[in-house]
Length: 150
Image 1: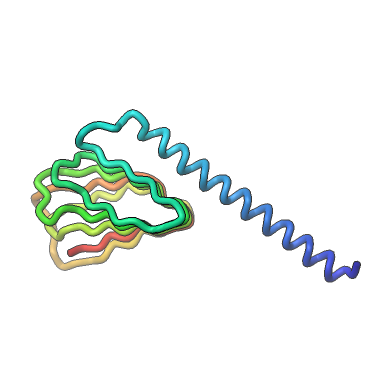
Image 2: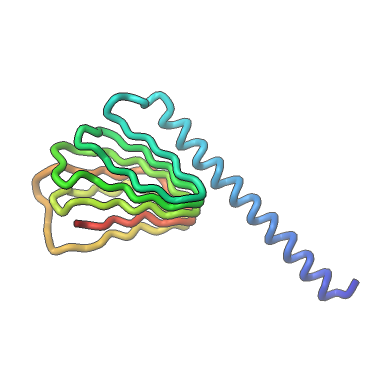
């Protein structure tokens, strides 16, 4: 076997190992998130797991907490047009994307832990002083969390 072939095979082996380790880490992160929310299956809580696909989640006006886990997929979380109370949204997005559609009347508090991920908030001219608050927590790794105002 030539030296070039040996180098190519070694590089493929390293790449495969890195991918396997990263995928295992991603699965572990989502598993920890699911264990954390276990036991919170109350009447006014919403829980959703999206893997290898897409989903749109509509949040009811009586929801207090929403837990969304997204692994190798995409999801859209749609808040009600006229929310009456504060909402806590806990996300775990790994190798995927989560988009949150938020009315302009809602104040946003960002507490997301980014690990080689991105947080994108669509900027508007409106400054929200009063009204309900959306508190976003959780983790984004190798993916994105996008806030879209409507």
